[in-house]
Image (cartoon, rainbow, N blue to C red):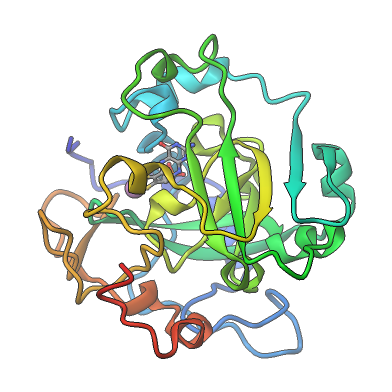
Amino acid sequence: MTYRFRTTLRDRDVTPEVHYLNRRQVIGGALALGGIGSAAGAAVPFAEGEVPNSFEDISSYNNFYEFGTGKEDPKRHAGSLTTKPWSVKIDGLVDKPGDYALEDILSGVSIEERIYRMRCVEAWSMIVPWNGFQLSELLARVGPKSDARFVAFETLVRPEEMPGQTSRMLDWPYREGLRLDEAMNPLTLLATGIYGRDLPNQNGAPLRLVVPWKYGFKSIKSIVRITLTARMPQSTWNMLIPNEYGFYSNVNPEVDHPRWSQASERAVGGGLFAKRKPTLMFNGYADEVAAMYDGMDLRANY
Ligand SMILES: Nc1nc2c(c(=O)[nH]1)N[C@H]1C(S)=C(S)[C@@H](COP(=O)(O)O)O[C@H]1N2
Ligand SMILES: [Mo]
């Protein structure tokens, strides 16, 4: 991991991001179902001291192996990615399969702002103000068939524009998957932006998954295919190192990674000497998601 020193005056102190955030509520543990400002319930603020990361933090410290394995590689190389035109193939066990143009997808959904914690399995974390829509809206539109149980996702393969793909270190395309109920959970987003701006390429433009109660690698970037399946799909990190990265990968401070503790995390942007934060069960979203795993052994189903 690379650390950089910061001066005391940070980006977020001087940019309009502060004003952006003042106008909006923050989603903490208890989500107002239906989105910010809905009548369903008040959004609960984060714990004291939990402040969204700056646009600079979020867009310059990334994992996106298609552009290299260093944290600064994605920002350096992702500018070359062509994100227009963009389409998403939706296939498998759905009533309306097809190649959907991104504009067509976006015309049928409502874009919301959601401020979520993001916890990487490597034990660093950020707080990100996403713009996006619930994956459930898109799935409802294409109509999962009654035997669909899982949703599989794939990232673009384009080695001409994604220099990391010229190495075989991962079996491209990057793949991820969710159980259908996880995919339909109101917390699960397809993100199109951060801080009200288009998603930077390094964050997974033009469309990426955000599953805030799972380790970050589940939140697959630059999605070109969504497939409804009856069987649990393969996922990149699980295929590569199955005993370290399970299909579920729910954030769980009580289940350590075989090579490090998951009990606490380093908040990116907090400075080199900042105290580590305790990691929360389901990343702080237990009220919204724990019921989906009732009766499941969370140690066996890591
Ligand atoms: N296609 C693809 N998606 C990906 C990754 C990747 O390498 N390729 N990295 C994952 C990991 S490990 C994390 S922690 C998050 C990081 O998202 P961020 O860079 O927007 O913070 O993206 C996830 N999605
Ligand atoms: Mo990650």
